[in-house]
Length: 144
Image: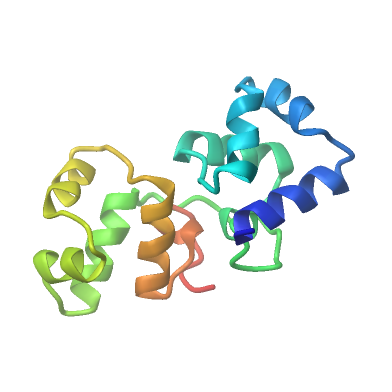
């Protein structure tokens, strides 16, 4: 069981909710919720945002990176702005960063054009740069 699965299970139990109830409340299929547990995959970023709001918790908490549930204030930065800043701060190149993350450079340019990465990619990027998921997604706290 990955950290997200453990945390989601904990949140369901703490809120006395079934998977079906959560699916209905988030207006997604129960198959999708069950997939998070049975197929070991992560929600897309839009569903992760909905879960974070629903459970009133940070992304870092939702994905098991911290035990602090506190929601952070929004900054004015986008994911792409924060990601680009991290590349510059680490004095590296786009090509080297993407290679080290085992991701295509093409993704970088898609993100520049406003698309968000897959949730698993955001988690990998946060771990690679040792920053919080919340920071990458435009919240104010940079480090875990």
